[in-house]
Length: 310
Image (tube, rainbow, N blue to C red; front, side):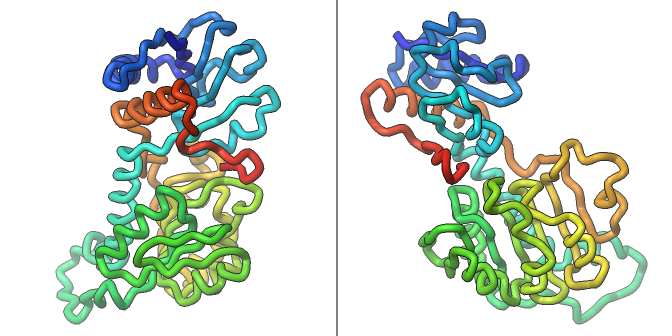
């Protein structure tokens, strides 16, 4: 029997208890699962930073920490964590992210805001959108989420370019990497979607210089991480017309403070970190599979590279 500690907000336990038990049963894992197990008996921790555990020292038998979150920037530097850390790559979350990104790219491509906000009796003929193949969309970040979103846009026939810190290959996507590749990825882009992890190497990747590479009047969607964008540079680009609009789901401080200029800016849409969230049913299957692999001596899925930060 393996002992699995669930360490997250109490409300999460209500959501996850039944799906985890079902996933363990399906994977033929004999497990004791709970929120209050003796630390010295715990083999695995199903973990969120919002839970009660921050010091892993008492967990002397611990084999791995299995995150419920896709982002692990608050975990990688924990000095007490010396076992494998696995981030959550949940196909339910991925589907949600693909839907959100694709929806907002299409919203901008088709110019839907013009018609939603201008029901004023004026017949605006001649304002049809170009074909998707004539729009360049850049996806910054080609991990599991970024690649899935990029391929969804490829299927709609957009001219999709992607950028990552290290070389990647995604079918149908023109891939760029490294500092030198960022300019080419963003050059004349009509739309940019940010799906990078939050690391020192990616902070403010969208700044005054990189925004200037885009086609004038472009659009930004950010469901990735707040620190990926230089807020002041974004506001300046919106005010100058270099950018036409930005839809932001994540922010440097959350909830976004009421006095933040994003709330009142006419060219910013704020959504409250709702682009995608981990789904208890599918996430439980991922956790069960990783515990099965751990017990079988196989490599863990979605293992975090501590030096890279994701």
